[in-house]
Image (cartoon, rainbow over all chains, first blue to last red; front, side):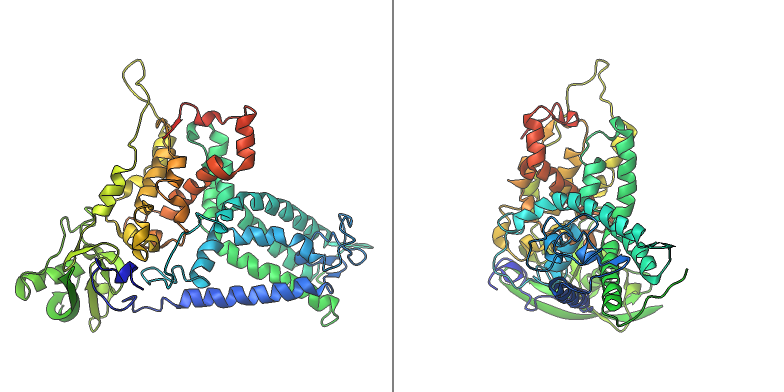
Length: 259
Length: 258
């Protein structure tokens, strides 16, 4: 590197960082967990099977709009002709929401692109333009993915409600409880989004003229402080629900019923 | 209880330098700046340090302690083990002048490029009025002491000298946000923030927030809201369509783009 912290005007200090703490631990943990999730989600999305067992539909496949197994398509099959896994039709929306999320951006720019790997640790790249050019300028579309995420959240809420339903009445199973936990975390993540915070009131210049929006903004702001936490928790919960449905549908385990 | 602290301090200037070893007696309750002053008084009278208030309010004594950007006067020795060696270097994003003193004029240049607050004409009684809730919004931003640690840690300029021309840095995004949220400012600064100030180069990795000695949530409360405002102005087709068919946000009335 000929510029940056090794540039001609800067204090001549050889190491790229003098940090002595374990600064590499957080990006390494992020890299490992995100990679594991991507591998798991990719395998499950392309699998195209074991995603539905009455009354549970995997969140990776919801809404099931392709050529789905009987009982899983609560919103019809407008893409019934689609030859690949039905998950591939809808996953772009939750995936795009998370990929353009301000918290995830921070995480993967640090962990995957090392830009920078940690604060005060020189990055390995010679040039940098950030999000000012193609393709990263499309990160500015985050609010559109948020609109879609609200719809996805509503559909997953519907799935959660009907997971308590059974042909001869109702039931409470471990799957339903997992789905409740998941949908709560999904909503916390969705409503704590920075674009949501902007839309409900952050864009205003006069809070005093919009008391209702100001109140909404204060609520979202309170959630927004923990946006990163909800991002992690909901990542685990959505994978866990899918895993549970997979294990049930493949016959590996049987349902644990409480009522 | 007094003990001997091992210090490594960068000594040098633009032509070169190295870390020098010093052992100095310190007391519990002292801060790194106290230890450096004792080195200056007893062993290295020519050690250059910029400092002023010793209370974390003037923003003068910015440096890097064990590689982390911090204020010398707000870093307590009790945070370290007495057997630790503490390494102190100048901030690494700005040109070094001598020892721990750097040339931070980059920041003053960027401050000059930012159009100042432009209030509307006064009310008939000669006053200007703001509601308390609008006043409170900007108070967090006004806590900034201009230590420029955020400017120093920001990898956009720290690791890429050539970006300095096009990038104003977190401290000034804070100012852009404060003014753009100000109900009395008559300037619309969104185009300027994205263009001349280079807001799009920020990849929100939050180091500015991590190092801020005032605890200002620079990224969450200033940079990201400013990015969202820029999206309103430049990248959102629905907002653009709304403005074309007469659905202009009344909240923005009376503003002119700079």
